[in-house]
Amino acid sequence: MEKTGKDKYCNCLYYSANALARMLTKMAEDSFGRTGLAPSYGFLLMSVNDKPGIQPKELSEHMQLTPSTVTRLLEKLEYKGLVERSAVGRATEVRPTSDGVKLQPLLRESWQNLYKEYSNLLGEDQAKKLTKEIHEASQLMQ
Amino acid sequence: MEKTGKDKYCNCLYYSANALARMLTKMAEDSFGRTGLAPSYGFLLMSVNDKPGIQPKELSEHMQLTPSTVTRLLEKLEYKGLVERSAVGRATEVRPTSDGVKLQPLLRESWQNLYKEYSNLLGEDQAKKLTKEIHEASQLMQ
DNA sequence: TATATATAATTGTATGTACAACTAAATAAA
DNA sequence: TTTATTTAGTTGTACATACAATTATATATA
Image (cartoon, rainbow over all chains, first blue to last red; front, top):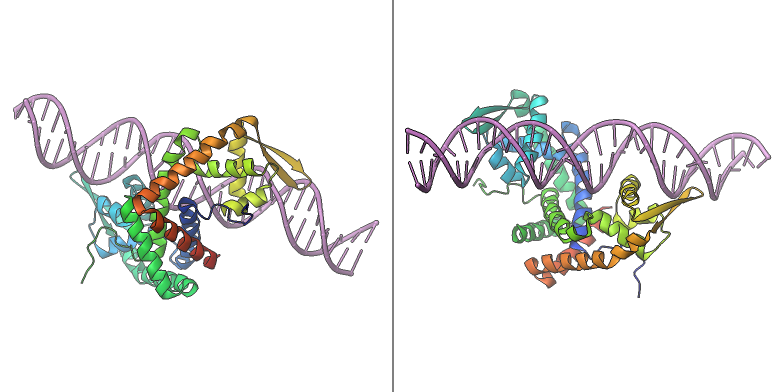
């Protein structure tokens, strides 16, 4: 029998994973709204605050983003006056400005709210389980 | 104790879901490489082939993409000579061209290969289970 | 029938992400 | 010591996706 459901490709992992990611991204954008930063920037700044002097290389591993993407994100954070970059040999060291440091509590709070929000919808245990399984799957794929 | 692992945010569903989606997208781009189309375009064209005359509205539900995104994808498929759009009242009907039809077997094959590839990495049962759980989660979130 | 509201689709614009090519520095090999 | 290779980072460019605003048609209300 033919499927006539709305989400035609829901048996495809590529499709389902992307659909879920888009929804969570929207949710995260809402949660991080008060910080004035999109979620990726928020996570990046939290990493810089947690380890001042951190290098883009390590940031790209933290975030599983390509180096070029990290450069782009840092450019914008620097433009906004939230981080500073300094060249050290061939490496670059990234540090938060005082404004960047000030934002940290709000960032953590936003992240917490995001967690609460999706945990509310999925149930906390189920959310944790799903996160773990997704993470394990992505370990197997890289 | 401090986490020092590489993927710092792996306990965050937003982060993990996006990381997985990026990997699967790359895998899908490889699988669909021979079609000359990025995966989204491939799925869209498959839907049009499956239901000639389908409207963008329904396509956007099939794919869980916004109408504007679907318009953009269709523009390009039309430019490539793979689909045609015709206005019918306020609606638009989309049909494959003969070139678009010809591509269908290769699209299905590419999709099949994608399935095989991630099933190989995750194990087919685990892949199915994960897909189902992800789909259920995204149902709860929309 | 005339007006208001809702719906389908498109357009301008912005954003996040990546690839390929490149620069510059560090390390290894000759 | 000179040359070759690897590594860190940045830049040009491209692409998928979305939002807000807009157009055009259809439906409902007065």
